[in-house]
Length: 163
Image (cartoon, rainbow, N blue to C red; front, side, top):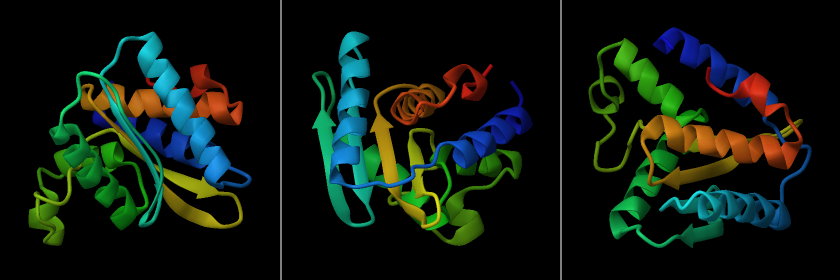
């Protein structure tokens, strides 16, 4: 798929994958679903769900390192800054042959425009947080989050996943 195709699909994902309400219990269900998918597939992941500065769910599975937690922090910083998927911002930077440091003055030590962090939105309220994973190649990190969101929201994953 081209960058333009992926960006169009991510825009659709972000538009469709919104909650009617989101609280601590919702975060626990979503995080547990992500963890179950990772365990079933023998994936080494760190999973983080937060509402701004408030952590709601965190899990580090066997095979992860502190570096995965650092990637989670840096990717979620991108989502909180732009209120868009970290993968979408990374693809846009690639398209423009730029970096967040060059374009926005954001230090690379604090912002990672790589796939795996996805904005949490509530219909009628807007952006409220981020769900982030780290441990797979960036497109796969993003895709796993989308799959879990589809399962949690009852959305058609076949219509929203990358081709």
